[in-house]
Image (tube, rainbow, N blue to C red):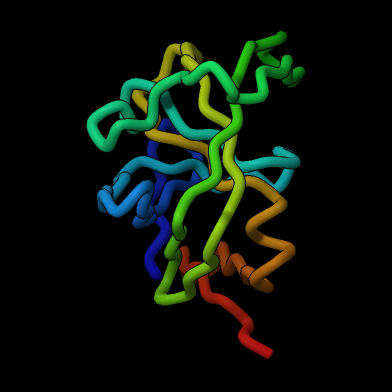
Length: 128
């Protein structure tokens, strides 16, 4: 899968399914320094991913400060043809001064064996 450089950062596209609704996100940052995968609340609202009473709310901390997020379990997430079912993500405002649909975090990369080749600007999944 090709990696696009936007704002000097690596971006890919992902597909997700939530309660039977499909969504493709085009501007997802690859971030090995992010422990979890975070999606932009505005980008996922169209598939009904909104805060609900029983959602877990948490505070995440990063270089940009703190942010309140809520947790959802996706039916599935697909990157480069590899799908994980029942994948947990965090949803937040992601007001970082960049137009961004989400962050693909280390939790996904570790689980799937993501290989990032910056020479070729490609992402692949090292399937066992």
